[in-house]
Image (cartoon, rainbow, N blue to C red):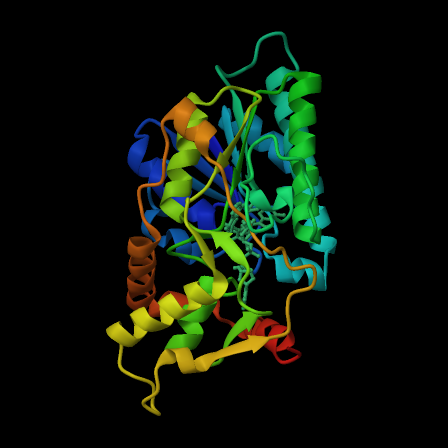
Length: 356
Ligand code: NAD
Ligand code: DAU
């Protein structure tokens, strides 16, 4: 892993991953290719932008020529592919970008890797690896019991998860057909620093700090399996270093919670840490049950036994600790929050929530 191409490194998980690699792999360089959509933010990596082992390239993963040139110029031996449209609600409002970036963008990356790594009898770089970062949502929705394993049949139910499932199938096909050295991770819900405030946890933190309604979809009893983002990043690193080529590894937090429990927890911690609301009420009073998400998956939960048994990985941060660390980070980084909440976010927020 000398020259690592990270796609989507200016987003939530990508930026945490870039920072971790620069800390933990002193002999590796990172080339971060990011289009800087609304979800990508240069501020997420402002602290490392002058690191001489880091290079930022603004560009689109759908641009095959740009990517192939990067492979050649930078002698890329490792790809960690995060770039995606990642928000389910936006995929329901407008699926087109999801098809474009998540499917065609992944296809363009796979093609560039195939052309560079496999076009001559010997790869131009030693031990190339293409790690595709995917999601547990490809498996669909669980009932009250059961867990998603690597062999659970795919059953995506939103435009977002269908586009991710499609990209997973392409990755798998490139391994089986061409022998591309791929790895895949399917992870549960992440939370932590640099999480864009359209997603549940940072949205609730931001609204609760500002005395705004806390929108909970449906009955609030949908379940997600929460994982602290740095744990996801260490899992990806472990899979890159030790995973078997062609394999998929599920990554999860072993931390199932109903949405309403998550929201109440955030409210209670904020009540403890910051001054009360102007009317003296607790932040739980801001909770508002709103119209449900269309096709809302009821429950996700990951069985990460394979990752634990084969590669010795398990989460190191409990939800109780991780949510406090996350809230502390947002309290210390209010400028970051106001930086990402530009006019287009306000428009998005109104269109999402006024109708509910
Ligand atoms: P994010 O939305 O925060 O970041 C996505 C990044 O990709 C942004 O920096 C954006 O600018 C960039 N990007 C988007 N389209 C691009 C394009 N066409 N070309 C280049 N760059 C582009 O996403 P995230 O939450 O950090 O998720 C990263 C990856 O992890 C995604 O593939 C997602 O499906 C997967 N994942 C996320 C979670 C989660 O809980 N957030 C869980 C499991 C898997
Ligand atoms: O499971 C992994 C997936 O987790 C990733 O693949 C996605 O990229 C990521 O966005 C996330 O998807 P979710 O749809 O689960 O995350 P979100 O934060 O949007 O919602 C979490 C739950 O909270 C979900 O049941 C919907 C609910 N919700 C969400 C928002 C934004 C609310 O009740 N109110 C809200 O305002």
